[in-house]
Length: 553
Image (cartoon, rainbow, N blue to C red; front, side, top):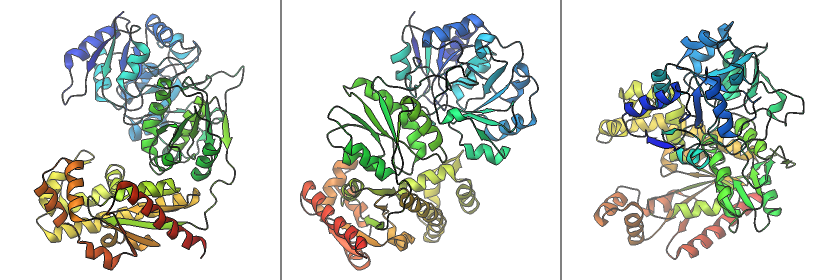
């Protein structure tokens, strides 16, 4: 049996490929499908023989139930009995999206699909390829994650090919998954509703709509012998690479220190970006910055899976706290570890020597090197440009305010930068209004991230912003550091880094603040006028002095 891959990542859906995949589904075959969470291994949910092939291809235990994927809430009553009003409220808020609801099933849904349960998990995925496939097949698609049972889930088509080549008919490649952990599963057959699996929709969002939500005990422990799973992923060891995993919980700085003290030569490390410099000789997989749980969710399965291509003998993994997406990320890491968890003592104790350092300077001066040094010292690095881009996606208030002032400058949820630029960059008054709006939201989020870093026991926080002083972010800092470098060095770095001409590099530098501005307005200067190694050493010397001042206050 040959696996055929269809690339569906272009601007237009390949209708012929979708029609072929729909025919495969109708005829009882298997199709790997992209969703916003992970890739699924899809079959006709109403065909017991097709569903049996899913279990066989994955090596999945037969009592591990499957989830039905449907195009919207209008299909709920086709397959579910006594659909409560709360299901429609949740669907209105979160579908299509990473939410699965457990409901009483109708007899049309086979026992093999539900693992013999009288309930069924059902969701509407948020991916145009899979929604088009469901519509073309005109059938509900049963689809667990498209990995070999027990292995890390697949967040890209090549992961599916690695596990399923030769076992299934085709793969619809819809690009990398945008969420990265499976859907959240809520049981609506009990009162109050019960969270059975944390996932891409945070518990806090469910509580906002439903009020009280109980969290099932198996979210934080291994299911015992004799217990029957009510939803996928509850009973068996999941997400595990070949090497054994230890999940380390607690304050990030403390968990990083624990890993450093217990690391052997052949060990692998999963950690936040800020702590990677602590492990220069280890096989390291970073899952994103400390503050960016969305990125951590997208990268956690990639990190686990990547170690199967190495010689590591065991893996030590930093585990996030249980707020927001952290509950789902931590659940996946703990399951990968078979709930072998080390809880570092002293978590969430504020560090009395905590220091907030502002880093600013023009393009090509070497700020990235300075920030790496701070990260290696246990300082949380807050990239304000990244904060702004994430707020554009996550903050409906920011989008609404920009739209009210500048008109429709969004394509869906994404800012049309070219269109906004045409409005503001030739109008100083409009640019000032834009900065007033964006700075307000960025400052609020940066304040929250500084407090998060303090509660997490980090040594300090570094705020990285070109407009650190102009925006008001400098007022949050104990010290502001202006990074400078000779003009010719900056031009050469920009030409090499951004692949631009010398004249364009010069024009970009000329449009920024001169060196004298940082001399007059920053607490201290950090001059980058030697080799990269010499600059890193100078940065470390300066930052150690800055941190020591706070320690002795």
